[in-house]
View 1 (cartoon, one colour):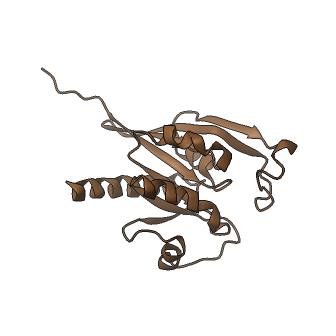
View 2: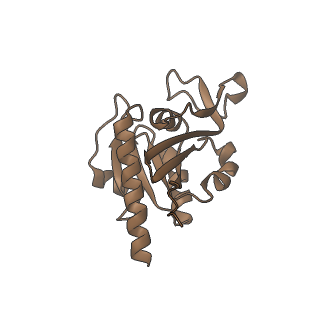
Amino acid sequence: MPADTSPIPLKIVIAGGFGVGKTTMVQALSEIPPLLTEEVLTSASIGIDDADQIPGKSSTTVAMDFGRITIDQSLILYLFGTPGQDRFWFMWDELARGAVGAVVLVDLRRVDDCFPAVDYFENRRMPFVVGLNGFPDTDRFDDEVVREALALPHGCPIVRLDARCTDDCLTALVTLVEHALARSAAAS
């Protein structure tokens, strides 16, 4: 009987606050045209979505983003980008179900926006890495200063990236998979 050569599918969640680059990261990584649920920000979101700190932001994810990337013949990653606004957090449980881990994107100009995502994955004991998305005019802080400010667990990796850059995003995914494997091995 021939060995099964079907690729192993792994589900990865891309999470974070409103406007941190989740959709951009899925777009940068996906080898297929990504499924995006972007909708135009309207006057109905005034007072709900704070786009004032994100100049030029005109749309938002209202359900999820989905992309796929084939690492090699044995591994395929399915990427699920979460919506960032708290009114859509009820979807996170479904998006995270069965995921091997998550990349939590952080905009250091708006650090408070990442705490719900960090708390979500910590509370569920799901492996995650923090991706510091390098927006223009962002102050540069040492990783340990960021770790302390975000109250991250000691072993949680921090990766600096530009969500528009495929290579940077791939580095974050590799770091996440390595982190998840190391946690799994330590638990065994």
